[in-house]
Structures are given as structure tokens and as C-alpha cells.
Image (cartoon, rainbow, N blue to C red):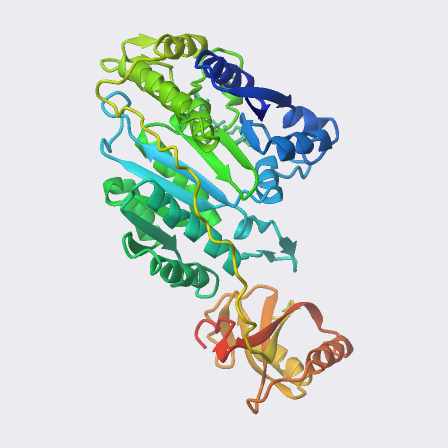
Length: 477
Ligand code: NAD
């Protein structure tokens, strides 16, 4: 018996979790459930994280968590519990298989069978945001080498284990050369370690467009967090319905399984919710804990139910479906079919070998890091960049003012008057003689700025790593 932690969540959560647990029990899954409370009630009781300490203890002890959707109360600064869970428990990999169930569930893509692997901890989801001036706010996009290596290795190992032919990478490294550029570079490095698996890279916009149009072109697709969040919902939707997909959040120690949809408060308590997303997440969970026999039994019974046209309202279609059922009717139909095999849809056959062989991250030798200058960000309400430059040049020491940009576009020297400017100016100081800049030159510039009554809001040091520029140029520079 394996103990797993379960949370019934909010909205339709309790209905679909009860349905899922009923099916797991009927299929003789060798699991015991330990229930914890997370979500709206916990938030509203004054706990802004949405989860009690004792619940963390349960998840960390049992290491496997089946979670129903929760409602994050609007306003009040409540942090998303899902994001907190993924990051706190190190669930770096979000795996979402998206397959169509043609001809039983309507889809324009009868042959699609794609697995989206989304990086789950980094990128803009670091949640580091600041307002810096009256007009400008920023969100920090953090991409790390260990983060890229872990998720990309995971994608290739997944492809190897499940006999997938190709891994595609989606990034926007034509624009974000350093952040997405790192993801792409690591993808190329790791792809070279798997010569038997095809690999290709797509700029995310055209990649997503092709995926939405011709999903049969893709097999396993790996991408950073934000693109993965968006693309995986689109992929699930075009496979038939977001209501059908389950997702696995996998870390080195713990794993969390959930439906991809939310708590659907609009239909809560009406016995019409489709429990399939959570049930299919439970199938992923059974695979993860080595109960492939039970996973197959449930998956086949579910496929038979879908094939027999016994459908909940969200996927019911005149002419295709034979019977409209509620959550409880659907649950009973799945239980009735335990032991049967589908006739048209694939019969489930899950490998016992589910251990992915992810090499631990090894930090590389330290690079030669050389300070070349500093970007000083200034809140300034003036309009003419020349005026600002004149004041900034008074701060020069061994570093010289070389450029001012506004929203990344060069406005000095030789800016265009057509360029729209806000009150947020990035002022670049660089070493002139090519030698490394001394550490003292930056505080020196800042103390001069204070004397000049310039409102400095932040600085970013400019480094070279092993002779390579570690910062972007200004647009138009
Ligand atoms: P939603 O996924 O809850 O609902 C979108 C639409 O799909 C609704 O019309 C809903 O009725 C329908 N739907 C969703 N699941 C269904 C199911 N199983 N069966 C039938 N119909 C279903 O998205 P939303 O309305 O944007 O969000 C509602 C709440 O869910 C919000 O508080 C949001 O923060 C939360 N949410 C939670 C999670 C999670 O816990 N993992 C994920 C997404 C959203």
C-alpha cells in the first residue's frame, strides 16, 4: 500500500476528486489516501499561502500528491498555491500528454499525440516584479543553466523511455538572446547526447502556430515556463477539451498530479463536471508509483466509456454521443467497464520501467568574469535625452557614458525624435581602455548621481564571461 496525499480543492474539486477516488478504489489501486485541505478556505482563514504546515509535512512524507483544482481568491495579494507548490517542492518538470480521442471526442486533429514538457520553476514565474517609476513596472525573467539542463534532459529521457522519435524546442531567442538563448544552447548541447532522437528548434510564435494547425508534426515539445503554460493549454484544447487532460509535476523527490482545468465555480455542485482530467492525472500517478496494472485497467475502462458515447455535458455531441451523464453517471460507467478493453481507441500498455535516468547537474568550471561597465537606470521626467546625457556625463570616472536607451531603444547619442520615451532611462557606462573596470567605479558613479540629484532606481553590472559579452546591446546600437 502506498500512502498518497490528496486535496479535494474548491469548486468542482470535491465532486471530481470523489469520482476519481471511487474509481481508484473499485480498481483496487494499492493506495491509501491522506486528505489535506488547501485552497480557498485556507486562504480566507488568514493563511495567505493557501496551505498549512501540517499539509506540507504530509506531502513531503508521502512524496506523491493528487490535487483537485483550487480557487485563488481575487485581490488581497494571495500568491498562487500551484506556483508555490511547484517551486517549493522542486517540481521542475510539468508533463502534459495531449492526445485526441477521435472519433468519440470532436477535434480537428484526429491523429494528434503530443507531449508538452514545460519547465515549471523559472522564467517570469520567479514572481520578482517591481514598480520603478510612475510609468514603468518590470518583471524579472530568470533562466538558469541548471534549470535548462534538468528540463531538457528530462524531455530527452522521456522521449527515450516512451519510444518517442523527436524532441522539439520552442524559444524566442531571436529576441531574448541571453535568456531564451541559453535554453536553446543547452538544448543543442543535450540533443547531441541523444543521436537516436531527432531534434529541432522553433521560434515559439511560428512553432505554436504550426502546433495548433498541424499537431501531427510534433512529438515531444520542451519549452520554458511561460510559453509552456500557454502552449500546453492550447494543445490540450485542440486535442478535444481542456477537461480531458491530466498533468504531472515531477521533481527529484516529490510529484504532484492534477487536472489542467481550474475549479469551474460556474458549474460547481451541479453534478455536471467531467472528472476525466483528474482521473487521467491519477493514471499518470499510478504509473509514477509503479502500479501500471491498475493504470492500464482504469485507462482502458475510461477509453471504453468514451467509446460507448457515455459523455458529460462538456464533450457531449448529438450524433456522436449516446448518453448524456452527470459526474456520478460517468463514474459509475467507468467502474462498470473495469476489465474491458477499448475497440477503437488504443489499449493502454504502460512500461514498468518508469525511472528516468536524469544525470545530476554538474557545475562547470568558473568562467573568467570581467567587469566592463554598468547600466544605471534613472527615473527622469524630462523629454530630451541630450539634456539627461549632459547631466550624466558629469558622473563619468574611469567609466564613460556610451548610450542611453528608453524601453530598450537607443535615444542617445543620435536618437530619433519619433521615438516615444517614458520616465525610465537606461544609461550605459563602459570602460574605455578595454581593461577590467575597478569595482569602485560603480559606487563612485552612484554617489556622484546623488550629488547631481539624479533619481537612480537600479543598476545592472556589465560583465564578460570568458571573453563573451554577457549583456544585450541597445536596439539601434
Ligand atoms: P476553469 O478551467 O475553472 O473553467 C473554464 C471553463 O471550463 C468553465 O466554463 C468551466 O465550467 C469549464 N470546465 C472546467 N473544467 C471542467 C470540467 N472538468 N468539466 C466540465 N467543464 C469544465 O477556468 P477559470 O474559470 O478561468 O478559473 C476558475 C478558477 O480556477 C480560478 O479561481 C482559477 O484561479 C482556478 N484555477 C485553478 C487551477 C488549478 O488549481 N490547477 C488551474 C486553473 C485555474
